Image (cartoon, rainbow, N blue to C red; front, side, top):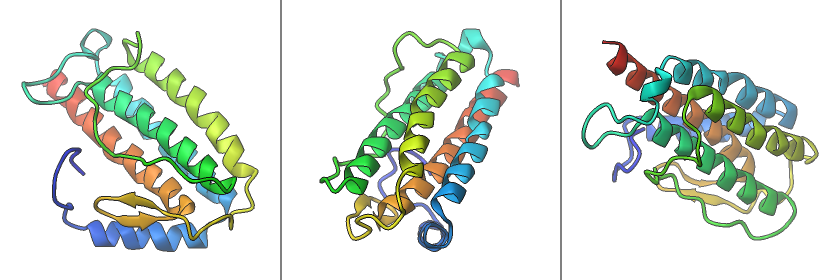
Length: 178
């Protein structure tokens, strides 16, 4: 998935089918475990980027590791707020999968970004684990490529999103290494 791309990537329907089927099949603890376990790829990719180059763009028009990881943090905040609003019966805020081009506060390296990620994600996981799992599944969040997703499907999308951006950060690390 390339952030900012206008048309759906090849395989978008296959990804949507995965999100829908797995979100329906897995219990909340399994969904949380999947997100928590697979997010480690973000940390591993980020740790490969030299600290002094974490905010450096590998080329004109490309994102730095800090900008990509900031996007992951922003999506965590927005996803958490939307899912919480749905589960508690409220109306969810809109969530947009777009890189802002910003960097998160004064974070400068993989360690700082990973600690912030965990500080955001762990309370999110705790809130989700308190849910029954069937709350307001008729309420959806719109994704431009994968269509309307209920909160369980969006949660699993967050996993796909994390993995996609871990690959992007890994590619940045490779560019700096080579």
